[in-house]
Image 1: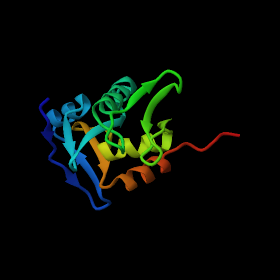
Image 2 (image 1 turned 90 degrees about the horizontal axis):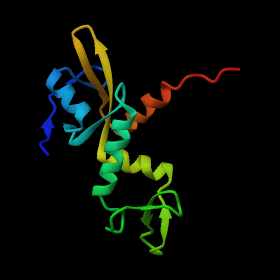
Image 3 (image 1 turned 90 degrees about the vertical axis):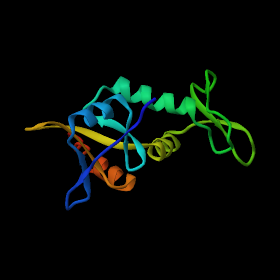
Image 4 (image 1 turned 180 degrees about the vertical axis):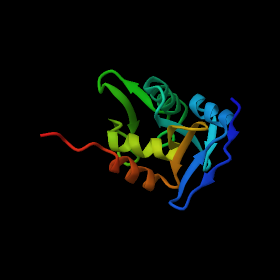
Length: 140
């Protein structure tokens, strides 16, 4: 698979943006590299495409012990091997987020006046802060 390195612009808040239309399309296809990681468009794209990219990457990568991830019907999800006790356990949502943030750069598809663009934070920690800040308030 051919990978495309992104040309990014950074604003004063540390937000990176990709404005080239070919690179935005490559980001939606899952072949764009931003900050040394593959771009994962989590907002503004198809949820099925995001899930497909994540689980395809899980099928290609190995866990902490160097063994490939497996899918368990008994545990109803992806499983990994414990590095200390060598027992098999389900990949928790927290561990899945850690894996996804180590493999991908979360991005957001934004419709601007000059066409679609992708924006992202400089670091994964900032991306989590930005995502948490955008959660809607619970209704009473």
